[in-house]
Image 1 (cartoon, one colour):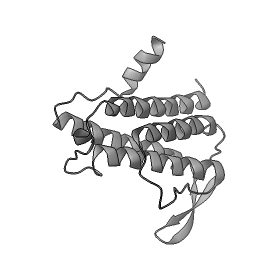
Image 2 (image 1 turned 180 degrees about the vertical axis):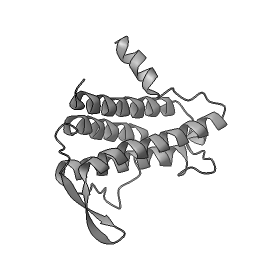
Image 3 (image 1 turned 90 degrees about the vertical axis):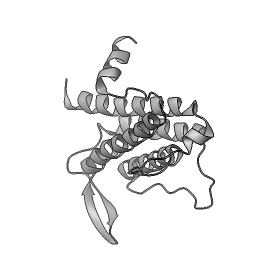
Length: 163
């Protein structure tokens, strides 16, 4: 397996895990979606919106050099819109991951100062960021007595092996 295959697999798993989690969360009640737990970003609904917005911005920075910004007066994303956004950015990241060279950088506002950041660091952040937040949602679900989906690489391998 070459590096492109490895990175494509990593970001394909990311997309699969995101969409499986949103699918499972779509079956929750509004009360469950608005549940939170100590140590999490917010409610399940807020975390899903945050994941979608952050991933969309990371993808935009990688592909265009600029962050994605939703209009400040836009209504909060629905779960269907979260799913659409994650499909867009996830597929975009799968496409772009093989185009990113180790020397490619993008300017990021780093505590008020513009800073050149390697795009490889943004790709690393995409995976790290979403993994942490997916686990927060799974912890909230577990606290509600709801079995969260298995989002491990092993589960992804099983699904892909049987496809």
